Image (cartoon, rainbow, N blue to C red):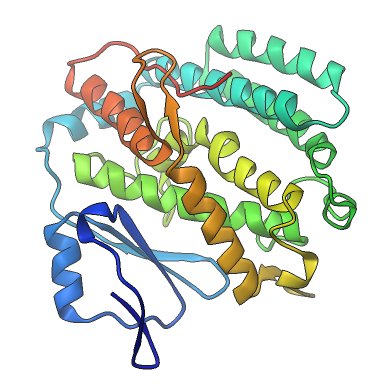
Amino acid sequence: MTMRKGKTVSTHPVHRIRSIHLFGGVQFSTQVLHLCLERHLNLSFFSPAGKFLGRLDTLSISGLDSRHGQYRYAENSSLAVTIGRKMIAGKIQNQRTILLRNSKKRPESVLAELKTLKKLALEAESLEKLLGMEGRAAALYFSSFSGMLTEKSFAERFQGRNRRPPRDPVNAMLSLGYSVLSSEISGICASLGLDPACGLLHVPRFGRPALALDLMEEFRPLIVDSVVISLINRNEIATTDFLEASTGCGLLRSGHRAFWNAYARRMNEEVSHPVFQYRLSYRRMLEIQAAQLWRIFRGDGNSYFPMTTR
């Protein structure tokens, strides 16, 4: 039950809730916190501007075996790169797909180079070379991002990816989306008994959910970027829904409302996995991908199959 000023705003069956994100000074009762722990609900806390502050952790369903395997992979770059290749190749393929679907004028040279970079990623001999290809692909992709936006007031302001803080409305939505998505994946990893802070591609450091960021790579274009493009091209959000200042750009309450509606819609959309042929929501696909890593780290699986769409 959601309440505002003593009045019920909405009610939601608990069995349909997968995660809860709190922005600003939202109050929760002890009984609700107990319910989240019992149901293994991912409860994440954000500042009013969207900065991730922390997460309520529950007991994992797995023992130490998966973490031992995870640390072994993280410490051995030759093992880590076998999974990293698939993750980055999947991300590049998804970036290319998003451009093909949404570009008003197809950037043929960018599409051709992304196709080549995907092949090279699958052959990368080291993490350093792999990350170099990922960086090049990201630069190409975001150089063509504004060409997918039909509203000039957004497209003209976007001059490439920037963060900490984001300086324009598009980057503000991208940063918020990536922050929320990484929080969701962190909760999924923790519930499986994996260590969200120990990554294969991203270097672990204080406050960074490195493994969640690894898993998020292939989903960035499919979920967050698609949400941003959809919001703008469907005229569901306007530049007046943002507050721009010398300290950066952020969403107003109206902007948050529009963003969350689109984000929930995307996460509930069902898609088929390219290998397993499961047809599940994007939120469930996050769990499928994390479970693949769990099986590999336990020694029950050999290959990682990224989530990609055509």
